[in-house]
Length: 551
View 1 (tube, rainbow, N blue to C red):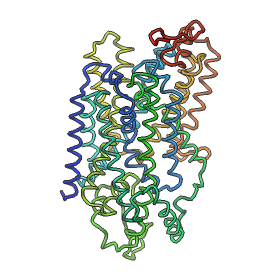
View 2: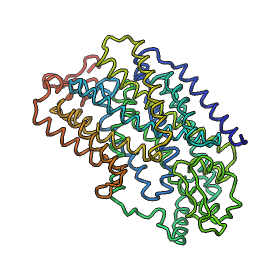
View 3: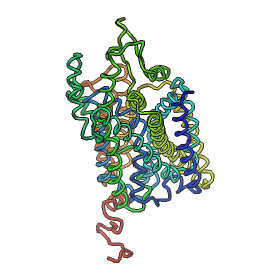
């Protein structure tokens, strides 16, 4: 093991020890701890935990690489993911918090008064979260594979064990506070390299202000090589708009994101959590385009055009992971830009080495990448666990189950789902950002219309919700499979499958709800009640002020 690997491994083990310590200290002792952290997380810290939960391997590892390789079209990920939080914060989060449930399936089951709707929502949640976690495990494999200089597949196996141990201990209470620590680590790890790269390339320590000049130079380099310019508008505008649509609506409907707003005490705290989350998320998302521009510039000017025999040492270590290919296809002994095949998933990890930023910075980025993968994996596993143990086992199979049995069921669900996702992640069906985009399309197609109409349309009923979820999930999943086989509509790829699932779900739910009996009056009153501050309640067609508020 070389010096770089030793430094990286030491930093990762140190941070992992911190996470385990927090998880043990905040160990869940009851179900409310395990599922919603006893609803006692302050908005500022919850916003940071949301940021940590959100900064997945796709954001940390994959997004800058996707923007670097796709150019203008890759910005759909940044705009879509950020815009979704505005929808969630203002359209759903406060109302769902006021309803006072533990999970999204529990809200759907109780709002529509249907165990069948609860079961379908729980299964949908497990499918979406399972798809998402494949990307996180794949990302951990990239990091561990580089550190140990082994194939990323074996790195994934090690990541499965680490993530299963970490998430099983603390439940939502432990995961929340570890996500706060993980956010701090990952954001420092992400920003430090681009500050150094900005100084190295432009002499300006503020990359957000300096990378514009580099983009202009990249355009000139692309023209010389006969390539499409880096930030030239994409020809497939339908795909870019469709992808933004799916990422935005999927963000507002992802079960593991929605449930984070259940961990605060009030509707007001839920709104502030969303506001803080946007601030913390923006720190990374505003940095990703700079990262992409600097990385591409350094590769094009300092690596491409060099002698094959004299390539720097970092190329061999990444070739060993299977994520980088360099070949002298024209036999001239010089590495051309077109002869470099670099995976989206290694750009952030490899660039500090490419820019020769030193072993500590490279190790810090590795620790940040693992923090990103762990933070989101923890939230996803808690969501899978709660869907199985709370919504299926407790609410449907064994309503008399003790807290001890429910916690045991939740922890076993985490272990088994991690192992199953790990098996799939050994040979992932796509790159990290692609896999994660499928999860967003599935979330949008399955849940968004049901959640929005469930909160804002009192006439929506159980039959409509069931038909909407099944049709939306079915259409979205079918299109992903067909698009992977090359069968597309309007040029929309598999990552934009939710474009078809969302309107089908919405239309079916509306038509079926109108064609069947209205929900009971008490359910309609509960829907009206969701729209008012917590001091106010709705009953008998009037808004009542809570006497405890003193008004």
